[in-house]
Every structure is written in C-alpha cells, then in structure tokens.
Length: 154
Image (cartoon, rainbow, N blue to C red; front, side, top):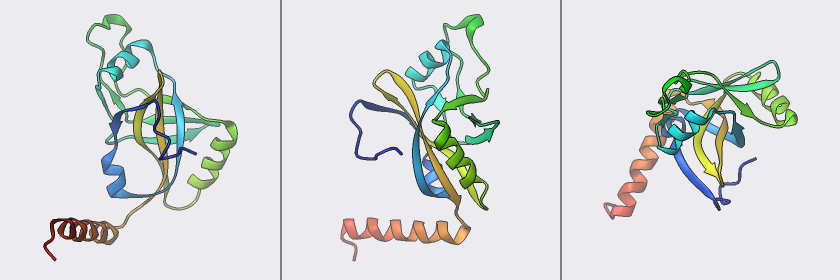
C-alpha cells in the first residue's frame, strides 16, 4: 500500500483530480506500469492525461484503460496508440485482493496519479467507491466552509 508521507524521490507527472471529486478513495496501491520507450519520453515531457482512465482485472492481470499518452514528437514509426491498454505491475496477492474487492457492488479501480519513483514510472491506483450527487454537494459545501474560515469570513 502506498504511503502518502513517503514522497522521497517522487516527482508527480499527472494527477486525476476528478477522481477525488467523484469517488471515495478507500485504499491506495503503488503499481509499476509497462511502457514503451517513446511513451516514457512523452511522459517525461508531461504529455499524459488520466482524467477518464480506469483499471480492469482480466486473466489475473491489471490493465489501465483510457490513459492518454500523447505520441512522442521525435518517435516516428515507434510511437504507439495513445489510448492503448497499459499493463500494471502488481504482486499476485494484491491482484487477488483487488479482484475480490472490485467484485463488490460499487467499487472501481481508478488511477489517482502518475509519478517517477527514482527513474521508474509508477501509478497510484485507488480502490474507490462512487459518490452520489448529494455526497458531492456535501463535500463541496464543507470545502467552501473551510475556505471561508481561512479567509476569516465567519
């Protein structure tokens, strides 16, 4: 399980802020990701988008779907499809645990952030439960009250 306080050697490339708005994040996991060289170079340039991405478990493996990695400009014939499914690298024990959890009603696997850990690209994967509209409104109201308190409006 990923530790929020352990940020040594971690350089964030992209975050999925929409996930924090749309889901309750129950647990987070750190996963490696299988990429090609031109994709890594494009990611180093920050040309990646996690907004509409999610992960699925198929055949004992985890794949991220919808993560857009723009083609590398100098990549010519070696560029891959920007929206191809990318395999996530997790331990078999973690995959079994996630498969069991996703089988429960309302749980999804959502990539929360993409970052470099030393020289490796890692994905912070969240086990999430969808928020209802009233949950989102409550969260927005609480955030607004917190902002007002900081400003001294109360």
